[in-house]
Image (cartoon, rainbow, N blue to C red; front, side, top):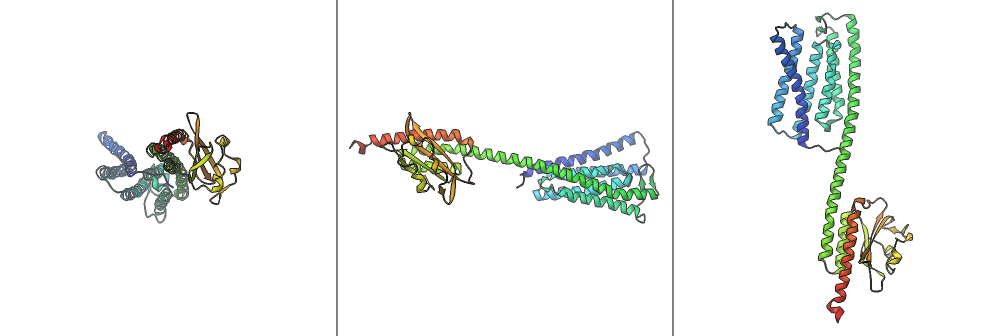
Length: 369
């Protein structure tokens, strides 16, 4: 199970990640204006680096316009983010090449690019390793083409374009191993952090869902009150009330007993409770059932042992009216503690309904005859 992210949230994430590109490119643009205003002569190497930064500004502006004016589908957003990430890696490689190759400290921009795509598209957390591999390939190809048969000229960080020495060759081949290792270690660390954050979000999502379900269930108790106040035939009223309570609580088994004229408990409604369990209640006095019978433990219901049970006494004006009992087999979800107050209120309302039902029955026409 994965944490849920809305399309709007993904859109906002990609939008703000692109703003970092925009800020980065804008910094180079402002730098170029300042240097031009101060009449500073720039070497070709420095000018190339500034132009690369301005190229980032250009495509980040285009991305900004696209994200601000269009409402792409989620798949288009993911494709767009991955495309920009690959473009970032290519631009960063060019920037590293012209800023000294293996001597350049700007390989750290690869790490920023990995962070950007993972933050922008949280569904692609594991893709940080694919991007780390792509960054390593870009970097190593730059080293390879610079060193092997001098396909690319060597740009020293201090001297500009110059001849590569044997010492440069040694250090550059070492960097071709060390830099990818650093990139992959960073990817692993960031992946662990991203997964941790995703799990925290998932836990929060599950907690919110559970609270919503609890609130929904608590509001559903009003339907039980409606049954107890609008259904006048006692047997039908209690059967419907038991069915609704089982639905709300997600329970499979339960029964309701009422005190009969002989002050003994009689079955009023039952659901998925074997006769052997019911016999532990029927015919007993209300006082005898202060607690559930200890011999219930070990009784089999539907092929499984009873694991949980709860009992609510139905008492109205200090007069016993009956019992509400629920059972649970091992492995079944049991009653959430947050429902206790509502169940206590239902038990009180049910006791009142049973009392008045018995009272009306005694005072009814048949009773007078």
